[in-house]
Length: 499
Image (tube, rainbow, N blue to C red):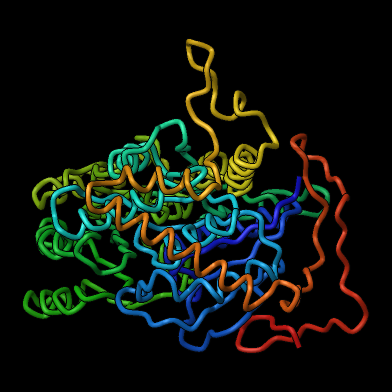
């Protein structure tokens, strides 16, 4: 059955990134399957209000104060009135939050449960357990996930991390990886082979690298500590010293950019290292195809979509063996290294030698990645999660039956007393604080129901909805929406808005 879904996260376009791309791609594929999806995020520079993106995806850019790395100021309750208004206007049934560090995500799940809506949370990151920041983040995550219907993680390592951080039942956590639009990341070595029904079929062409040919190593990353920028700064001079015919091409921005520039000037590597600065996501492929090796020195990573994009472009990948990265690509596409300077230099040397010897057939990577990852498959698996929490499929089918014939998990109750019981078990002092937050949120909801009645909220017109795709991938046109005469769209600032 078709659903009305709200994707909520602080991180979305026009900011580039893996979480942003994930939300956009899953949303558009769910729309293709007949569902209605809106995205709720904060305002970006030049983006405020309601915008329409490709495929009729509506985005609400809410003007809230941003304090750090595009994360809004956590206020707990002030987001509730406008959130409720959007939910009622769009007739939302499922609220899907993304990101452990997204304030909008945590607040939206709290408010959605108060309003009696089904909720899903997707975790895209890995966190520790010892430092102060991780302890506070994990306690907040435990608060949010103690009253959520289902959790999705992008890798098995991410699932293990999330289950431990929030003390969850593993049965309510599913693993659904990221994907890539392989057609947008084709290598330069593709050329037409034949015509079939009017379409050109590309074929891969081998790029043989001689012993003296230059090799370009590409790095596309946010220049932050957790992305391994310090490790890159330490290893890069040694790699260039060991291999005279190697150059670096680095794209990205962040607080570590100054350290990187200073190292290049100090070592006088300006002629062998090119800094591109920040690049848009649609420009990533054009940068990647200029290289032969993709270097990913991250210190922590739940999945690493960029290495899938690099392999799809025909690059050999050198990456650190951390987090969920070992789950992403098969061994013949990657060379792994410990997150240490010496090992990263050695692994890069092995990759360079493998390319020069011809042992690695990178021209085959694109077709292999295309078979492994698909956003359509991700959307189908996400849709099954929605079916499970709404009762469209039985709990036995969704959660599975244990050895004693009983189902160990189930959807959460909306009742306030049941919610308070779950919150109370989150800690001696934190449990009482969480209960207080839930009670205040419920009182605000009652006040809003009396003061801003639902009858006074105008319902939004729906974009023409596509036929719903059932489990057998057959269209079922049981909810055809049509724009009436006079409903005009025009384009302003790069996106569609209602006139």
